[in-house]
Image 1 (cartoon, rainbow, N blue to C red):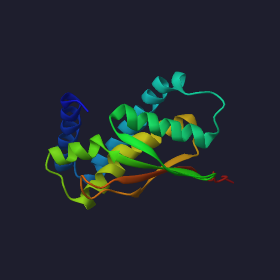
Image 2: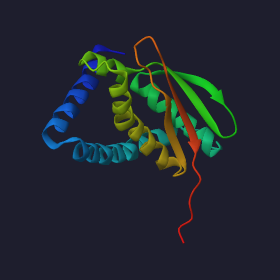
Image 3: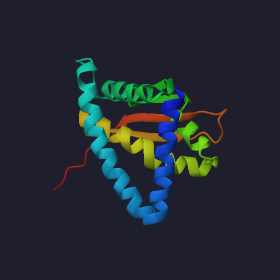
Length: 161
Protein backbone atom coordinates (compact mmCIF):
# COMPACT_ATOMS: atom_id res chain seq x y z
CA UNK A 1 0.00 0.00 0.00
CA UNK A 2 1.35 3.39 -0.93
CA UNK A 3 2.22 6.01 1.65
CA UNK A 4 -0.41 8.32 0.16
CA UNK A 5 -3.19 5.77 0.62
CA UNK A 6 -2.04 5.09 4.20
CA UNK A 7 -2.11 8.82 4.90
CA UNK A 8 -5.63 9.06 3.47
CA UNK A 9 -6.87 6.28 5.76
CA UNK A 10 -5.08 7.90 8.71
CA UNK A 11 -6.81 11.21 7.96
CA UNK A 12 -10.18 9.45 7.83
CA UNK A 13 -9.61 7.78 11.20
CA UNK A 14 -8.46 11.04 12.78
CA UNK A 15 -11.47 12.84 11.34
CA UNK A 16 -13.85 10.23 12.76
CA UNK A 17 -12.22 10.55 16.17
CA UNK A 18 -12.70 14.35 16.07
CA UNK A 19 -16.33 14.03 14.95
CA UNK A 20 -17.00 11.63 17.84
CA UNK A 21 -15.43 14.13 20.25
CA UNK A 22 -17.64 16.94 18.90
CA UNK A 23 -20.95 15.14 18.39
CA UNK A 24 -20.74 12.09 20.61
CA UNK A 25 -20.55 8.44 19.66
CA UNK A 26 -24.13 7.67 18.60
CA UNK A 27 -24.76 10.69 16.31
CA UNK A 28 -21.31 10.21 14.78
CA UNK A 29 -21.95 6.54 14.05
CA UNK A 30 -25.34 7.36 12.53
CA UNK A 31 -23.67 9.81 10.14
CA UNK A 32 -20.99 7.24 9.34
CA UNK A 33 -23.65 4.60 8.54
CA UNK A 34 -25.39 7.01 6.17
CA UNK A 35 -22.07 7.77 4.46
CA UNK A 36 -21.41 4.01 4.19
CA UNK A 37 -24.79 3.47 2.49
CA UNK A 38 -23.97 6.22 0.00
CA UNK A 39 -20.50 4.79 -0.58
CA UNK A 40 -22.03 1.33 -1.11
CA UNK A 41 -24.11 2.66 -4.01
CA UNK A 42 -21.08 4.35 -5.58
CA UNK A 43 -18.80 1.31 -5.23
CA UNK A 44 -21.48 -1.09 -6.51
CA UNK A 45 -21.97 1.09 -9.59
CA UNK A 46 -18.20 0.97 -10.23
CA UNK A 47 -17.94 -2.78 -9.62
CA UNK A 48 -21.02 -3.99 -11.45
CA UNK A 49 -19.46 -4.09 -14.94
CA UNK A 50 -16.49 -6.14 -13.67
CA UNK A 51 -18.55 -8.78 -11.82
CA UNK A 52 -19.04 -11.96 -13.85
CA UNK A 53 -22.58 -12.95 -14.73
CA UNK A 54 -24.02 -16.29 -13.70
CA UNK A 55 -22.69 -16.25 -10.14
CA UNK A 56 -24.84 -17.52 -7.30
CA UNK A 57 -25.73 -14.85 -4.73
CA UNK A 58 -23.10 -16.22 -2.30
CA UNK A 59 -20.43 -16.32 -5.02
CA UNK A 60 -21.33 -12.75 -5.93
CA UNK A 61 -21.06 -11.68 -2.28
CA UNK A 62 -17.64 -13.32 -2.01
CA UNK A 63 -16.49 -11.62 -5.22
CA UNK A 64 -17.73 -8.21 -4.04
CA UNK A 65 -15.98 -8.69 -0.67
CA UNK A 66 -12.73 -9.78 -2.33
CA UNK A 67 -12.77 -6.83 -4.75
CA UNK A 68 -13.68 -4.29 -2.05
CA UNK A 69 -10.88 -5.41 0.23
CA UNK A 70 -8.37 -5.82 -2.59
CA UNK A 71 -9.15 -2.36 -3.97
CA UNK A 72 -8.61 -0.97 -0.46
CA UNK A 73 -5.14 -2.52 -0.33
CA UNK A 74 -5.89 -5.55 1.86
CA UNK A 75 -4.47 -9.02 1.34
CA UNK A 76 -7.32 -11.54 1.63
CA UNK A 77 -7.79 -15.19 0.75
CA UNK A 78 -10.48 -17.80 1.27
CA UNK A 79 -10.05 -19.52 4.62
CA UNK A 80 -13.14 -21.73 4.45
CA UNK A 81 -15.97 -22.12 1.98
CA UNK A 82 -19.14 -24.19 2.08
CA UNK A 83 -22.72 -23.99 0.81
CA UNK A 84 -23.74 -21.50 3.53
CA UNK A 85 -20.80 -19.07 3.67
CA UNK A 86 -17.32 -18.03 2.62
CA UNK A 87 -14.88 -17.04 5.34
CA UNK A 88 -11.91 -14.90 4.37
CA UNK A 89 -8.64 -14.52 6.19
CA UNK A 90 -7.33 -10.95 6.16
CA UNK A 91 -3.54 -11.02 6.41
CA UNK A 92 -2.70 -7.42 5.64
CA UNK A 93 -5.28 -4.76 6.40
CA UNK A 94 -4.78 -1.11 5.48
CA UNK A 95 -7.48 -0.03 7.93
CA UNK A 96 -5.66 -1.72 10.82
CA UNK A 97 -2.45 -0.07 9.69
CA UNK A 98 -4.16 3.33 9.64
CA UNK A 99 -5.44 2.82 13.18
CA UNK A 100 -1.92 1.96 14.31
CA UNK A 101 -0.51 4.98 12.45
CA UNK A 102 -2.69 7.32 14.52
CA UNK A 103 -1.98 5.56 17.81
CA UNK A 104 -5.06 3.33 18.15
CA UNK A 105 -3.52 0.03 19.18
CA UNK A 106 -6.06 -1.58 21.50
CA UNK A 107 -7.51 -4.74 19.94
CA UNK A 108 -10.92 -4.23 21.54
CA UNK A 109 -11.14 -0.65 20.28
CA UNK A 110 -9.95 -1.71 16.84
CA UNK A 111 -12.73 -4.30 16.58
CA UNK A 112 -15.26 -1.58 17.32
CA UNK A 113 -13.76 0.71 14.70
CA UNK A 114 -13.75 -2.07 12.14
CA UNK A 115 -17.36 -3.02 12.82
CA UNK A 116 -18.38 0.65 12.57
CA UNK A 117 -16.10 1.78 9.73
CA UNK A 118 -15.15 -0.89 7.21
CA UNK A 119 -17.81 -3.57 7.59
CA UNK A 120 -20.79 -1.18 7.06
CA UNK A 121 -19.23 0.03 3.80
CA UNK A 122 -18.70 -3.55 2.61
CA UNK A 123 -22.21 -4.49 3.79
CA UNK A 124 -23.80 -1.58 1.94
CA UNK A 125 -21.92 -2.48 -1.25
CA UNK A 126 -22.95 -6.14 -1.08
CA UNK A 127 -26.60 -5.23 -0.47
CA UNK A 128 -26.61 -3.34 -3.76
CA UNK A 129 -26.03 -6.72 -5.43
CA UNK A 130 -28.38 -8.77 -3.22
CA UNK A 131 -30.17 -7.51 -0.09
CA UNK A 132 -29.69 -10.88 1.63
CA UNK A 133 -25.88 -10.68 1.57
CA UNK A 134 -24.21 -10.15 4.93
CA UNK A 135 -20.65 -9.81 6.21
CA UNK A 136 -19.53 -10.32 9.79
CA UNK A 137 -16.29 -10.26 11.68
CA UNK A 138 -15.56 -13.71 13.10
CA UNK A 139 -12.13 -12.96 14.55
CA UNK A 140 -10.50 -9.55 14.93
CA UNK A 141 -6.75 -9.18 15.05
CA UNK A 142 -5.37 -7.74 18.24
CA UNK A 143 -1.88 -7.08 16.89
CA UNK A 144 -0.21 -6.46 13.55
CA UNK A 145 1.15 -10.03 13.54
CA UNK A 146 -2.31 -11.60 13.78
CA UNK A 147 -5.12 -11.81 11.23
CA UNK A 148 -8.85 -11.28 10.94
CA UNK A 149 -11.51 -13.69 9.78
CA UNK A 150 -14.57 -12.25 8.05
CA UNK A 151 -17.54 -14.30 6.89
CA UNK A 152 -19.84 -13.60 3.94
CA UNK A 153 -23.23 -15.34 4.00
CA UNK A 154 -26.87 -15.05 2.93
CA UNK A 155 -29.35 -13.99 5.60
CA UNK A 156 -32.85 -15.37 5.82
CA UNK A 157 -35.29 -12.76 4.62
CA UNK A 158 -38.12 -12.25 7.10
CA UNK A 159 -41.57 -11.91 5.60
CA UNK A 160 -43.48 -8.88 6.91
CA UNK A 161 -47.13 -9.65 7.51
